[in-house]
Length: 520
Image (tube, rainbow, N blue to C red; front, side, top):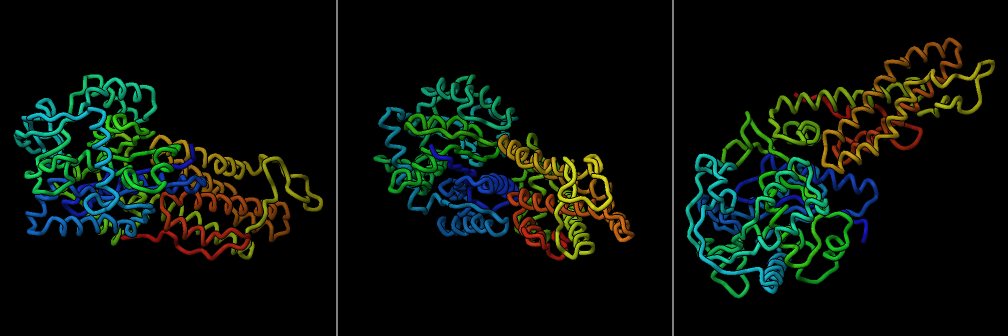
């Protein structure tokens, strides 16, 4: 088994342009991908668009456009988020037009059929078009879908069903054992409760006439199309060439150390139950982890196209920049529970952390190095264990505790990588960014405690020990800032690159420039 890390987002419907909720998931997955690359691990990051849904057909009709034209226009807007949000995905799959997809879906269907896991029957049920899902009466809240607030349609159809109930015990075992890990724990517990309550077989096809002929035909039954969720879930492996030629499927799915899905809480059952059952039926490896985020809200209401309260991420980036938006999504959004968005909160967090916190620290550090050491970062004259190099003539060795703030900062920097690794391993972006800010706070304490300008004044007055102490303070500050820029790169890659360019890797540092200018 290789050390390969494969991370995916859910693929959104293209019945409308992307909103801020989509940006959240894309940025979270991007951080995981960039972080693993930073650690030297082979990474593949997949995203894309779910285009074979009935709601896409309905939206196209409402817009007076051909379905293919309509979905392509919106799919392009999702793909273009790569530039707007500084995303590093390696692959973007479109389920209606990508030549890899349909053959893989057909292969999955035939393998499941060969296991005897399909049967045809008539079905009366309640169908939510927003969810693209049949709902039980017990799922409804006051007769409406709890996700979309609309009454589901009463539907009578003859469909193909999948024997989900056959895999209930096996799914429960892999979830209880942690073979498939769900984070946060609260989401894992919800899935376990759902499975333990008993699983019933599910419909996995729809009449082709109902879908206006849009979708992937069921193999050997052209009057039916593959249910959109079965079709969409398959993208995680069809994008790797499953059902076709090439080695990507073997490398990134079969042999990968980790296969991670990043999804929203509204589609947990599809990924943590139905997808697992499909893979078990076809004898394939399971995902290693499913990371679940909650929702973004505005005034307490979930961001949703159907609610009419969507926020355009392109507009936010145009006005505030990608650093501000990415940082808010990673620093402010709760690991558990919904998070309310306002532009003022975005601005406050950006100014507090990036402009006034980190940006000011780096700017001040570079200014001090240029003012007192002609732009060359010195070697530390004192270390935690005592003096480094020769002592100034006639001076006693400086005790280690005399530069305690420098020692604290060095130790905090040394622990940063491990702390960030641990936080991201459990899908906790707040904890990861908190760890980074622990270093920023320690660096600012060093400046305030040691007061380099006073050390420089004493040095000019002939105090060589003060000069040696100033060397240590400046050296430790520069190293801390370089470490921060390095560890920050998965979170705000553009801003981190600007910091790294100013700080350099050689003793000579660049001129101070506002890496995170103030916004209005």
